[in-house]
Image (cartoon, rainbow, N blue to C red; front, top):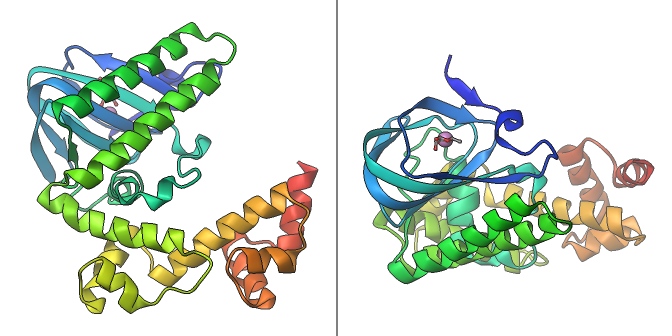
Length: 289
Ligand code: RM4
Ligand code: NI
């Protein structure tokens, strides 16, 4: 059995879902997976990073995300230094506001980490000196807040974390590696879908954005997201509907239209498929908790 790092051992007992570990240097560490995700920023030295079938030489400026269940290890360490930001994605609303309209966000945080058994680290990001300095400054700020645990630290730490996520998402778009490019194209399509969530977007449009034929777009999309574009759009819409059901008292039919459905019965059916509940039952349950 592979070693699994536990949330309880790596996060503060108060349960805050972000934690920073600096490795200066990174010591040898057996192959392992995690109950959380890791955002790794390499600040110096080098090593061979091994994850599944894939291995690659890691150097300063490399940034990548390891989704929890993915096994990884560092080999042939040569004074490798890194900042490791551990986080629990389910406890953080990462795709807030318009972040999902940044293609690099999908490439780095939603698509890349989920490609568990595929060539996992090919879409990694490499930062230039200036970008690196900005990220390190934000990571320092994050760490100071986490150490202080002063009232408001949770807010301030989350703000710094979000800035890191936003900056990296933008950087991804400006300097993708050749393999990162394919991922970024799907990211572009996702951000287009996100920006046009209220209307129906057709396949031709998406394939054009991704610079692919419709056939290869469908294939690449499926392998990157594990689902079809239509199912992806429906899931996003249902997500939004859940938010509106929880936070507003708008009528179900209105919400259905708000999130882009034009038939409220169809909406209810899809809603039930995704959540197991009718919109009304969902609302009552959420208010009851
Ligand atoms: C280790 C190494 C691992 C990380 C743990 C938290 O030193 O960096 O990748 O999962 O720390
Ligand atoms: Ni790890």
